View 1 (tube, rainbow, N blue to C red):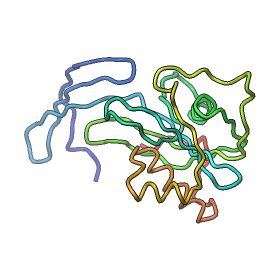
View 2 (cartoon, rainbow, N blue to C red; view 1 turned 120 degrees about the horizontal axis):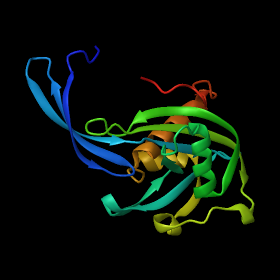
View 3 (cartoon, rainbow, N blue to C red; view 1 turned 180 degrees about the horizontal axis):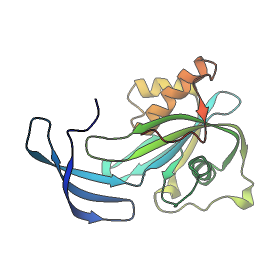
View 4 (spheres, one colour; view 1 turned 135 degrees about the vertical axis):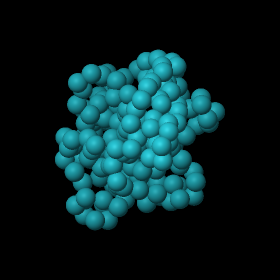
Length: 199
């Protein structure tokens, strides 16, 4: 079923910032009439499951103010550079947050992180053939990244942490589960890193 019944009739801007905009949309409904929907229009993000030769994934533990907790996450960042290749953006985040480069990158999974109120789309890549960024070329971390913890965890153990409720970041959950499934299928489900965004 397509969205032909859901026509945008009007939009009121509530807030505009660097990462997102908040709007109230007036939308026609299939049964007649209209309804208002508050929407967070987000720039989008990339994330990367970095898998080393020993089958371990790179996880970062970062403080997230909105939830007031440290969360286990994948190296990730915003799609906030106009025209930047998304795989290149993911590799930049891998270098900045985990001091790693990758010799091979594939597309793992796409997701809408919270489609009930946000347009945020996250593209998650799988990076392999990892190598350390030379010490003199490493990114200097600031703010919440300054005390970021970086660890490597066996992929199956990471999946177990997801199922135990210890990993709750949506991109991390999706990336770890997708990586385990792709590995178990001999990597056949992987798509090229430059595959077009769906929709």
